[in-house]
Image 1 (cartoon, one colour):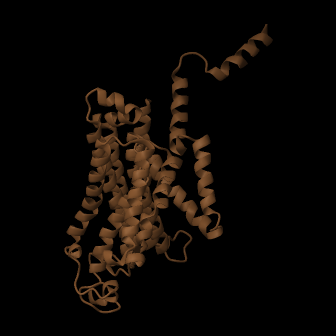
Image 2 (cartoon, rainbow, N blue to C red):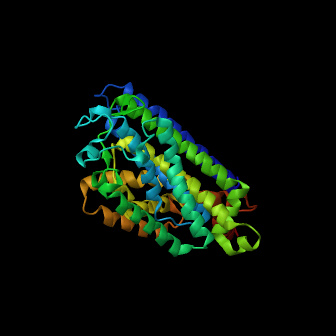
Image 3 (cartoon, one colour):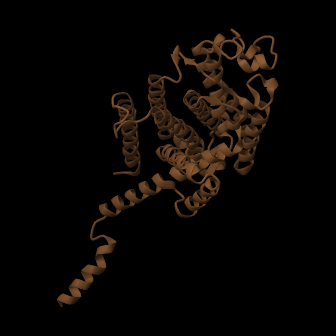
Length: 385
């Protein structure tokens, strides 16, 4: 089996496992009694949905870092923008059920003495408009940022610093009350989504299934991009951008497209994250969140797509366990994990496994005895003589 074939097989395994979870978790939540050992509580369903949203963010980052060499330290900004777009829709669904009972203005606007709804809130009471903004706002920001940066041939550590500055600037802006987006407290106290109660058990299960489907679709899109002729140019840009440019390719165009698609994936992940967690605030813009996403990709396996998603789930599951048991030590453990992976597993978990299996298959295909079998055979012949 070729290396590409192994990647295909790995992808099908990933999609199969994801489909199994999308079927099994709702069944174990809805159809098993609460006192059963097999029952999955509703809070765990939302927690797993959050992990899948993080996995989608990691996959979107791997598309640009693993295949195009763009180390973005600001992908959390696209995730947060998608989350805010969904949060604005959810806030508009509250209506007069808020604390102050205002039929149009959210509670925080009433508290801050807003007289009317800001213009950029109009349209968010309509779900299709909000869904469009989930894609359009992160995608437009990524397109403009990428167009300016890549045309100027900003690369390497300089590009990483600029992406980090971008998300830091957005964090400072969203912390301001006059932004009209909730300031420090953000957006919360959601009631309904598409007419269904957000806290209802069936809604939680549906959001989990939709997140799993979105992750599968994001993988298929990223897989189609990276295995096409376009993807081969991306890899060439990652490995030797100047040579690729000298061959006549407009490398900035390829990078802008990948960066924009990646940002839109991250925005969808953020939009699915918000109703399951129940809040979105400016802390999602903190550069530390974007750096954590880089660690997820490194742990799972850069340039594998599946590994990035796996890293997003595993690291966040470990974070859930360890922040409860040792909250003060989690950040040190996360840093140590990144150092260990960088030194001993530079290809990440999935990348190392794929390389090991591919190496064994290649050695098995060679004629004659395997390298480890030569010495025993010589020793046996010596004893026989």
